[in-house]
Length: 210
Image (cartoon, rainbow, N blue to C red):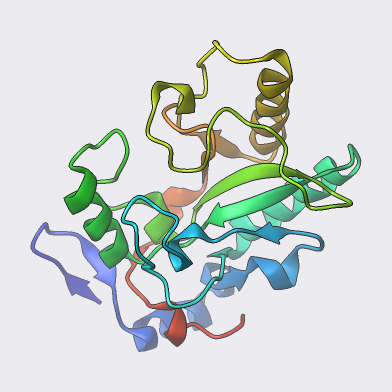
C-alpha cells in the first residue's frame, strides 16, 4: 500500500490485497465470467478498439468486488426473463490505467482525474450494454462504448424510439440492484457500496481466477 503524489492511498501490492481479503472476504475481486451464466464480454481495453487506440490490458477479463459482482448477477438474471443479457465492456481497472486515460483525454467529464481515482479502480464500477440472451447479438443503444459525444449522455433524447426503449431497460435493471448511472455515459454504472472499498493498482496477471 502506498500514498501517491496526489495523497491517495492506492493498494499496489498483491500481498496487501490478499491480507485485506483474508480479513474481509467480501473485498475479493470476482471473475464475472465464472460467476454469471451467459454473460458476454467485450473487453475493449484488451484490444486497440478504445480511446487510446492500443491495448492497455494484458488479459480480457472483467472483475468486480464480490457484493458488486453478485448485484450484477441479479441484473443478468432479471434481464434473462426478458430474453436479454448483459455485455460487459469494462469492470475493475487498475489505477495506473486511469491515469493514462486522463493524460490522453484531459477532461474530467470523460476520465477520472488521477487526484481522485476512479470507482473502476475500486472494483465497484462496470460498463455494460445489452444483448439478445440466446444469440449474444448486441441490441441497438445510443452510441458505441466510449464514444465521447452528446448522444452518450443518458438523458439524450434525439434517438429512435427502440434505442430509447433499450436504454431505459438497461438503466432500470441496473438501478434496481443498487447501481447508479453516470449521466455522461449511458454504459457506466457505479454500485452504491463503492465507498467501502480501496483504490487498487493491481495488474490482471497478479489476480488469480477468484
